[in-house]
Length: 479
Image (cartoon, rainbow, N blue to C red; front, side, top):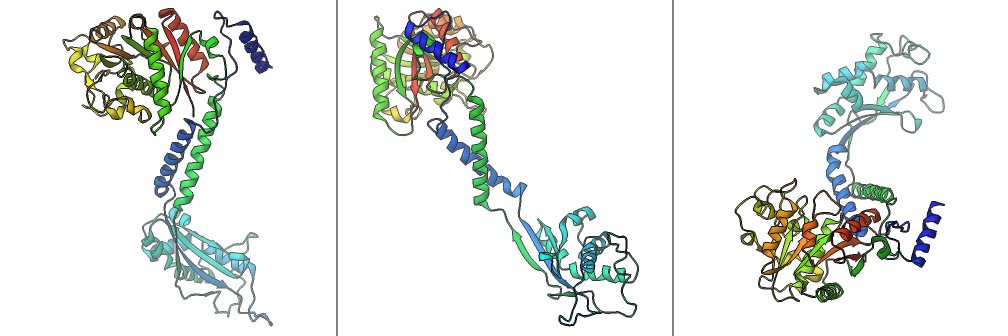
């Protein structure tokens, strides 16, 4: 009912026009189809989880070595006429019980010389009756091949010693009814209770985990976790090109651009170039400063910011300077190679200019061609320094600068170049009103089917109040 009510209210808003005092939007859902970015996320999850399972197979599963000795348990003192021998189940159970008893394990440890506790030996040695026949298989299984061989060679010999002790009365083997299994033997019977089928020569085998099975199992588990995470995130409302986004955010659309892929794309270049020309034409005094903001999707904002900087350099005659003012994350600096997690690899930038005598002009570095998304890399000239970058600097995170100090740095660089700013997430803990007041246009970046509607509504309210008439949104489409 709630979904029907939302749909009804959304239709009423589209018919009567948007009401900005109470934003109404559809119950938009995240696109769960394996499209970009989920198709690449799914591929990465499969590869990573599969590799983790393969690397962990030696630690968690490991290779097991096993040695098996087979004996045949028969009753020979009272042979069966047609068969010649007679199989008696209680005797088989008594031999199986002896092969798992503590005296047998003590004798096995003494003869094999293996330095293992009785609990470890109890876990290593097992006695089974395959197919419920007269054969009893005693198996030792361990990760160490030398230990396995040493114990397996003494299985039948140690069993013989324990059986002789039981027949001599040195130890008792009781069945479920409390009777001694070896007390019923005739006093004059000296025959064997079992036959050693292979003369004490055990058979050896290796059980190694299957790498393909571990690979596919880990990849499948990763996919299940990804699907579970998608269903959890599915409850959050997302923006969609199929809904009235203009009425939701209360600002004009600057353009729609397909997300950047790995291949060169003329469509991407045309979209970016067309939006750049439109933005430049909408500025009566010419484009001097442009800011990109958003909530989340930091890597996507960094990519579109760099792409616009490359495109602006083909439109304006002056140089273009990228300034990363997202002091908490520095996604743009990281994309441009100015911010590294390794100590000593981060380049000086905005945060180092605050409260010091460093000139921001001296910290500018040319934009590397490989920092531009591959699909629009053709917008940046192969030579020259048409675009420069000023990163966040060595002090990332924390209140290292005020909005007024950042605005002064931007104003200083904007004297002889067009500046494109990467602002912190809006709404956020940093005040950026003074920065947006000095920008010709502030662009709110949205990701189709991915950006939360509530975050975009909150960001649009801040932008409409801080820069009325000088803000718009850019929709990055899937596909």
